[in-house]
Length: 385
Image 1 (spheres, rainbow, N blue to C red):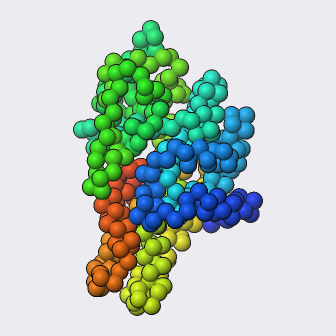
Image 2: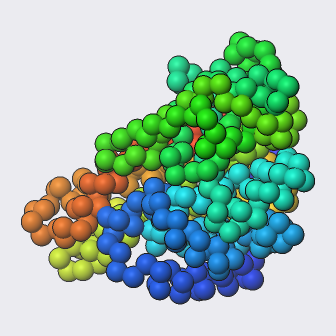
Image 3: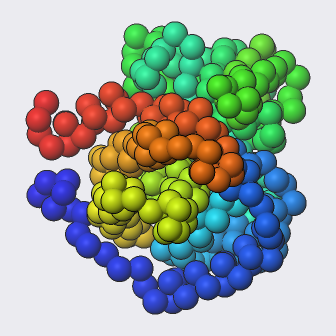
């Protein structure tokens, strides 16, 4: 059976779909009158108070078992929540990684002590995680990891560097892919995952300013950082298998479709007015919808696989690559539409939102795996290489 055959159309169960109205009511109260250019920063919006309000509502760690403080709900319930958060442009940056993948990763591979310690804190909005994967001089070659956690009597001595680590400067913890044995030439062998307390001595975090002026990407340096034995997640040497499973959570959700959605909605609202409506704009809107609808259906189908405990790595890569392409198309196409008109008649808020999304859009095809790497994975999954 091919990848495409495995993504059978799936419907979100009614009980999970019913959550949508509750989330919309919550967001209407929590985010009144926030301008579009601020809401467009949803991915990068760091607001601890908002994250903790979500936790109070029971909407962090929704898929984690109740015994660890979670909601015990399906991936579909979280899908509905995330779809509404991103559509509204809610600030999700702080809890994002912990809720989406670090918590499920610890649940799947962690020790009982790790589950008891970290998962309740994630569910309360008290523990924010970042991902330590990419490294300098490795490009998109994740298997070329050189950061080393050398086993010693106290646990592991960590040395090396990570880059493009989103929101490391706002987080308490990192799950890092490191080398515990062998050399970079050994590729997948000798890799492990460790939880790093970012307050430990020897850690330096340097934010990287992007074109928009945001500082969500970071460099993280480790200089003789002593980790305890219980920092290891799962089994030593099985980090590649674990991180590959983790990426299925990162690549498949609505966040891979909706990075430009606040801009699109703002533009669409104007196109629906007599001043903004043109034949070409209506065609553009229809074109975006005809791409977005099947992509969302594919994304929901991946969630079905996740609810069954599967690890749909190739399917998630396909959703991410196609979704990123659409996300980057939207600001470029809207810019062509608006700048083909008399911009004096275009709402200033719409132009400000467009400027921000245009500046940040190049990062869409970096985070979660670059386009070339994903296309190689997809080609192998389709039997084309």
